[in-house]
Amino acid sequence: MNYYELLFTTLPTEDYQQDLLINALGEIGFDTFEELDFGFKAYIPATDFSQERLDAELALYQEMFSFSYEIVLIPQKNWNEVWESNFEPIEIKDQIFVRATFHQPLPAFPYEIVIDPKMAFGTGHHQTTSMMLELLLENNFENKRVLDMGCGTGILAIMASKLKSNVITAIDYDPVCYESTIENAHLNNIDNIIALCGSKEAIPDEEFDVILANINRNILLDQMERYAEVLKNKGEIYFSGFYETPDLDIIREAAGNYGLKYIGHKKNKDWVAAKFIKE
Image 1: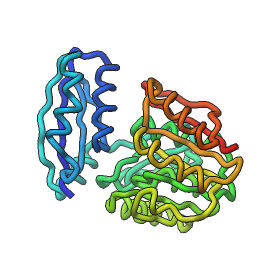
Image 2: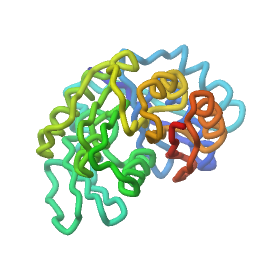
Image 3: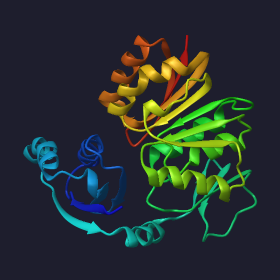
Image 4: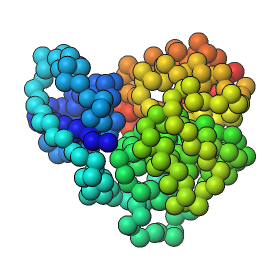
């Protein structure tokens, strides 16, 4: 799969204005972002890119503040090189060490996750993924049946397994993410992750104790009814992939319509990860 890389120059734009651009791009299919000193890079599968949709989405912000961008096509054969050149190990709360296959392990960490950094999104570097990992650390997953929607690299499913979950169903619509989840589960010696390729239609007719959904606001709103159908009573659901304002209130209102009670949330650079319980 080929990708488009858009290099945005935003100086002297304020941080919140850059976040507005990133959020807008996420709404039209951009799934990976890299922040830079002078702006950011945004990536989208070439098959999902539409110049018309991009122009329409950015028109409002061009009236609000100044920015520019350049487009570069990245052939599939070069994508792994892009990932590897930007991939650094990360640490979560002195508990989780996420590294690539070409980094040395750090045995002092209770949990280590090894990720082969291909084009799949979800290496732990983005605030939403790191906050979700923190939420996993803070809650009980032992013997729980878990559904991981928009699994990306499988990092959350792998962590759920390391926290002694029973069986984890990991779903992503991108075939590369599906394959990456299988490969990364193998790298971490995990054998209780069932990977499926698809969207909400791929969710099996089973009951889950916990649902993890780190996607974006619009997809969460579209799929939330199905999540509520398969979540056990008193089951927990963790949402991320959206901003505190205005997204959190929108998510809370929609969740309430399906019997999902808001418990609390984490915030990092205006990104949010929130916990709900089915009543």
